[in-house]
Length: 140
Image (cartoon, rainbow, N blue to C red; front, side, top):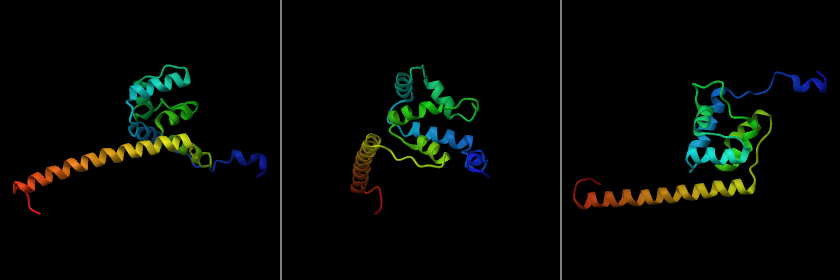
């Protein structure tokens, strides 16, 4: 095989349709924004109308002909603050995606927000447990 033929080899990893859809699903679900808000932001970023239904079709197994256009991936990555989709694309091309500072800051904000939500939930559960123990309704 010559150097010119190397790119024509069929020996490259291909993500399955299910992997792509699952990646889109996880990225959308991991966002603090509604799918409607994501669709609005993506529409503004790419200059074409993207609806919630279109977002849903990109993740639905029942819609095999509907795929997230590769040209939308950078904008969606920035909107969601999630690098999963672009990372999968990079891996499939034999590389690795290293997120920039802004994306990492967004991810860190999401982590901090989730930690705060979990701390609040922990407080509620501890208070409920303490109240139950005081009432003698539970065993230690």
